[in-house]
Image 1 (cartoon, one colour):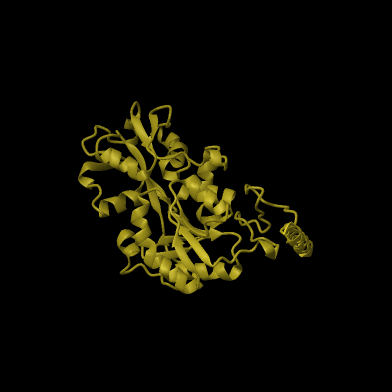
Image 2: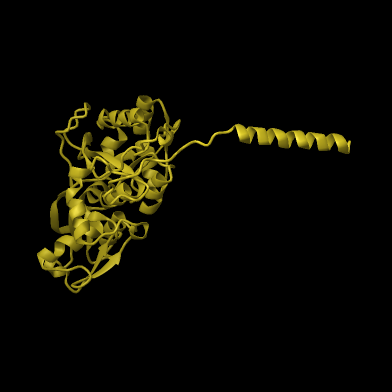
Length: 337
């Protein structure tokens, strides 16, 4: 019996060695990168469009059976899982893939999920978009906007504004009156919640952190609710978030007053991972640009827009990159907060 067992073990080991010897390692190496700009060393930008190029080695191109999508984690994720489902069904129909919602609780988690290959399609807030592009190979191609014709027209318009809000009965009447007060910012990487105020307010005669104390709320919704409930003296927020919360009846504008607002910025970007197949990328874009919001949950939530319009990171995010460069922003995970 022992002899038979020994022979069996020898045969198994021999088979294992034979299998290993017959295997060939897959070459996943990429050509040397000669131009990457601010991109992480994992990525290359040979064409100079500021986003990661697709891998040159076909072994590194991905065509997953299941696509994972997420929306910016700024607000209650549960609300958006249901809201985006009809749109995810539309993506599934166009791509022929199963599409699932991937819930994240922070910008860093969202960006890390795409970097590691667990997330394929995402909506990422304005400021963190630059971090996702440089740290995770994220390629933005669309925004929610007006003028969408369902045919991928580039003639649409988009934008939101940085607003400074205060309680309706506050003595603060202008941006200059913020001096000596505590003002809520959202997170360090947020554009309208932190980066833009730090870059733009000095020209208005007031410097965040010097003329007023900055307190971080953790999100635009938290800042807005804080002002609405009288917990914050003032807050820097995105007008689009305030509009949606007011439309849903979460806050009432008879208790909130806007004392200053900026020019328009790009809204949440939508894009995909750089290493998806060319055909899959094209079908994802087709799904976005052909989706009409009218009569859908997205149409009810985002009442100021009618669909997705095409954009490029190089052009649409130019003012955001300028703001972040002014602030000395370094694209590292330590700074994604």
